[in-house]
Length: 274
Image (cartoon, rainbow, N blue to C red; front, side, top):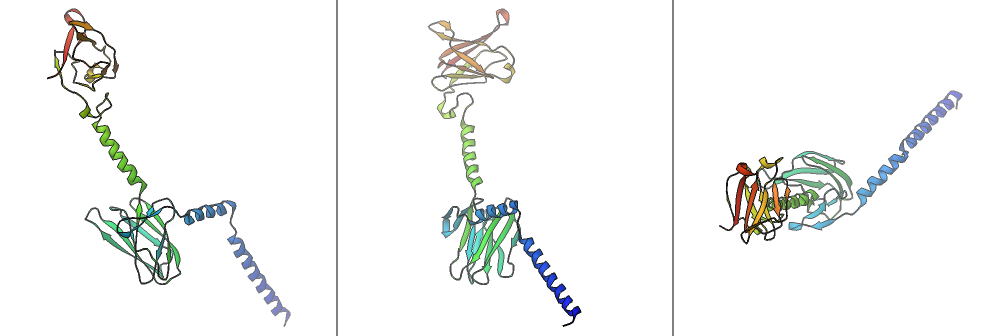
């Protein structure tokens, strides 16, 4: 072997060694990169909550962990998304040996999108990302020679929160301001007579207290004085103003509201019943 030939072999070996060294170094991870892969691996490997839904559907809690869907050759896996959700992109790691086809169900305007998955062989592992108009799904896919999940769906935490919010809104709508109880538990049977710019707009009682609602024009003005008529005499009882609401610590039968003096005095009479 000539010197030139030997030198070429040495240079070639050096280049191969250098390339191998660079490739090895390229696989080294920084501290943050290593920590990131560990955290991501923990999320991917956690079991999470899996339960049975209607019609044999396997239900995952969305966002808790990365769901792992098992499919089988010659079978189809049906992943059903939330009704009304619009799919924007479907990205799969192995596009050669995994096929995904779209389908829909439900009435027009509230249709649910289905992703039909078909692996070509057993022993495959890959991942799929589905972006929609509402959220992003990160799903792990694996194929088994005989076992598979026929139907897969999701439970959404925000749906539960929305249901409770709707219930609370209905309850709050039925609560009359001031009393803090539903309207069907209040007595609105009060007669009001007299003329005044602050004449009450609504009076009701929960059986212990009486609530007198004044118009918004009373804000910033001196509220009228309340006298309860008992035994032919005008008596003062405990009451307080809460904005435009007078809360009286008494179940009124007959009362008088008075504002001003002399010729400018205004008086409103309240009687329970009628």
